[in-house]
Amino acid sequence: MDISDILEKFNIKPNNEELFQTAFIHSSYAVAFGLNHDYERLEFLGDSVLSMIVSDYLQQTHLDYGEGKLTKIRSNYVCQSALEVYSKELGLAECIKVNLEDSNITDNEILSISADVFESFLGAIYIDQGIDKAREFLKNNIFPYIDSKVIFFYDYKSQIKEYGDAEDIDIHYELVQEFGAPHDKTFIMSIIVDGINYGTGIGKSKKDAEQQAARKAIEYLGL
Image (cartoon, rainbow, N blue to C red; front, side, top):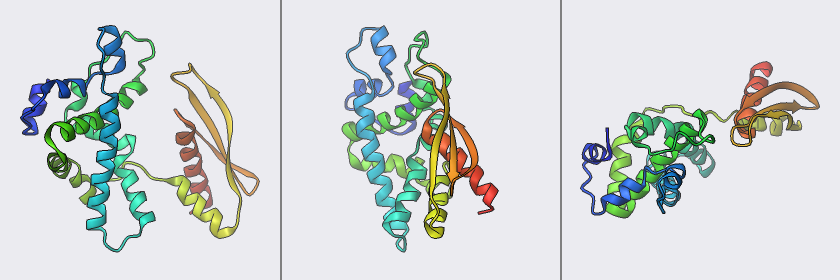
């Protein structure tokens, strides 16, 4: 699938097709081929557009929910794991232009890039077609995930924090080990509940490792 197929698939008649080409260009590709543009500015914009439109939809469809609960629900549908799925399912990931000879490009980085591209493509839609088309794109392709209550991310840290607050117990995380190249690190974090180590978690970021550690503590405590 190429970019023209993507545009046809989503019934987009571009005013500026170059904008959509740029939405798929990773910085490694831009450097390798001497281009002066990549998707990062579009990604920045698309991130805000996604958050705003999803927020608007949630507050219309969840009238009894407060700000805190709406924020938690939104985080599930705008997190990296969700964006990776959107990008793959919609065929956007197939159009990424990246320099695979760059030693910094790992498998994890490719997943991250695919998530970025979903946002940059949305940013291009917003600039080229306007907010109504961006909303239509999300309504047709992302809102069904929300309506079906698909879970992309579960916030174990928030759950264990609520437990600690309710029981007046101190809960914090400690770095056990980190290893790997600077661009591809792995972290091991432990969770300390009331002074006791309740488990460790491993992840490609400290936050991911903390989530895994929190999950183990929740299982151990039977929460």
